[in-house]
Image (cartoon, rainbow, N blue to C red; front, side, top):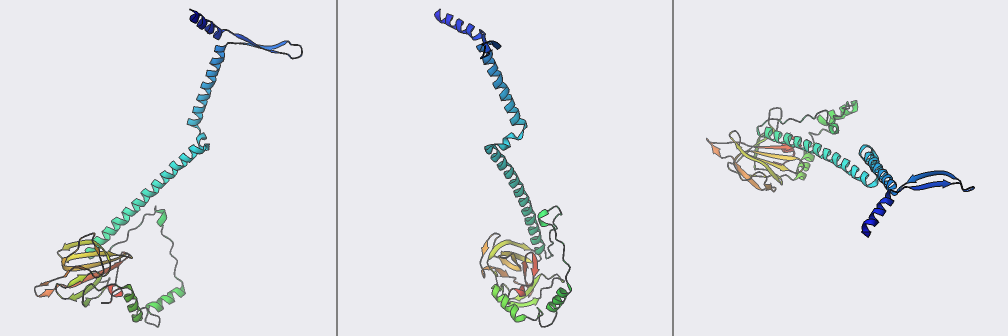
Length: 288
């Protein structure tokens, strides 16, 4: 019973109003007063805390106030940077896929004996916008005429220096024989034709990787090697291929055999050399 009486007394005291007044310090007269109970003070504090919580929640949800907080600003910057990096990676992957498709298409054209085509980049590619060509000057035209002509400084007349450059490259001869067909793009000859012994050994001109090894009715077995410096060597008219795609080959290693005798004739061995996606004269790189 005593406990119940204590609770009742405490409950009544909670709602019992108290008088708060303000007195003048000079004559001790009352200037202002207010009646408050402990329950009303508690309700006022709860209401104030609730309003403060709602205001804080509204500021966080509908204003950029979090950007000014050190920790939250760092997380926002990281998210933004991560998004930008992912976009850049996707763009780079798309370019790489396009380059790989173009590369495979050019290899297929090379195998068919046709000239590969260069991919035309879209104008939206901001990193590879075509630059404005500078027109050659009169002096440049004169120098070009001297270099391409038959004069003292003509490139065609420097046979000895060209041989030294070819020997410095150190590319091995694919097969011993006599060149019967010269390199001529205008006539569709993207390489040289070599008359070699039937079933003779065909070797790699340099270290590389096999990117194609297949057979066609027109050219027999074909082997394509990828070398350093964007150099590709193509071996056609083989009677047998001893390599597989993806295999690593060393310079001078056996990759196949020359065509065998058919109807009393031997098909000429064809050798092509491509540099940066363009056919080049093998005699400018290899001393046959």
